[in-house]
Each structure stands twice: as C-alpha cells, then as structure tokens.
Length: 329
Image (cartoon, rainbow, N blue to C red; front, top):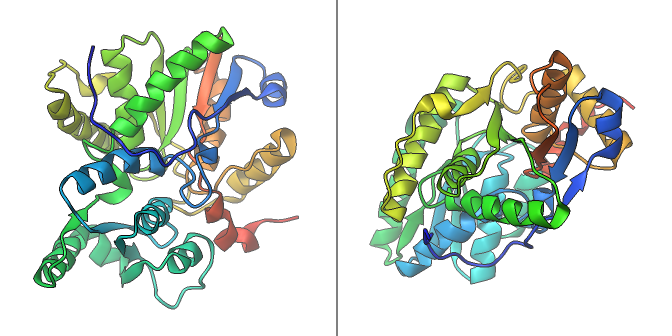
C-alpha cells in the first residue's frame, strides 16, 4: 500500500456529497452530484486548505516560522494561508497581484483581519517575477533570523497535490457508502494542484472513473504541462514512477470567457439561476465557470455515456463580494 506524506488536520473532513436533484432533472442526461469542499471551514474554506494541510506540515517539519505565498488580490489560497499561519501562531507574507488602493473587500478583507503582511505587485511583475519576489522576501526574513517557507501559487506543487490524493481516497469510501459510482469527476482548474492530486490517486488506486478539468485561465495545453509537472514532483515523495502521459490528462477548454476572474453576463446569470435552483452558491472565478461549462457540455452530448458525474465545489464564495455590482437583480 502506498504511504503518502503526513498532514495537519485543519479542514472539516470528510465533506458531504449531495445529488443535485433539480439540476439533473432540468438538463437531462447524467445524474450530477456535488462534493461540498466549499464547506471545509470558514476562514480556511475551499480546496486550498486540503493542499495546505500537507504543505504547512512540511514547513513545520523543517522548523519554519513564516509562510510566504502569492496570488491574485482576491486569492482564496492566500486567505487560507494567512488563516493557517494565524492558527499556528506564525507569520504570513502574501504577494498579491493588484492595486493597494483597491477596496478592502472579500478575501482581501480577511487577509487584513488575519494580520498578514501584504506586498502588492503589478500584473506584469506578478507574471514575470513572482518567484523572484518571494525569494527576495525570504532572504530578507532570513537576515532577521526567521526561517521562511515558500508555498507556490495555489499550493500547486508536489507536496500540495496530496491534498486531493487524500480527497480521492475519501471519494472512494463515499461511493461505497452511497452505493454509487462516478463515471467522471469534474472540477475547475486554476493552477493544477487539485487536478493533479485527483489524477495521481486515480492511477495509483486504480479508480475506474476519469478526471475532467475545466480551465478558468490560459488554455488546455498550458494546464496539461502544469499538471504533468506537479505529478512528477508528487511521485518523488512516493518513490514511484508511473508511466503517465499528458494525453491522459483531460482538460475541456473554451470556458475561460472574458479571462481569469472576469465574468460574462451569461456566467453571472448562470450563478444566479443555479443558486435559486439548488440553494448552493458558486463563485465567479472558478466553480461558476466550471459548472457553466459542465452543463453546456452535457447539453452538447459530451458526457452522454455517463450515468453519474461528481462536481468538486472548490469554494471561493468570498470572491463574489467584490463583483456584487455586476449582478442584475
């Protein structure tokens, strides 16, 4: 049996799996279920905490006392990192892509309440130099006698990927409890770590279903490369070398819309209609785009041979608040 690395226990696990009765009936086709990873916690809600449980455990094992990470100004991952640091009584430093003058709302409000040290950088600086910027912050902290640990964007690296390796084990147990098998597991892809963990576990545990991602930025080829890279890193922890190819990584492109964190009127209407239909709130950055894409693809017949589909709700509700003015009621 494969032994994965140790982790902390911050998330409320296991998260529930619920059938989306009304949505399934409305669109016809496969039964759609949803795994409520939006309910992993409050300050640490969403998929990011699963990855952080492994990454931060590694940091503590190395006697680190500062967590440095990066993301957009409304990054769910950065907010969760700040929350974990506060819970542990250590420092967090966030490199955020955005303007320091932007309204303190959503995740940024929580970051500040949690006492994170925030460095704002431009879009161009973030894209080209975020790793170098974090390394510079790390070096300065080391000069002050601290021992910092850098967590990449989204905790999407080899150690972080085990958050969703662990989730795949959880899903397999829940299938037995529910008496149902999921032909496809579907999720939003924004940095690749969640998809990578599910995919790696599906291979090592010989899960018969397949993992499908909907990219919310960049394109399918970009994420196949990113996920493949994370898989290689994760396998080093397991001391296994599965013969995996990028062709086995399924990404459905075409639902980025206006771009990362930018919503079209159609996407916002879908989030509103879904909330009224199922009483579940999707976010405009990740799950809104991915569920919008899933429903569109079901209507196209992409999943016509599936009986049951599981959608991973990766959280992100705080991202709604800075976009509240875009909704029409």
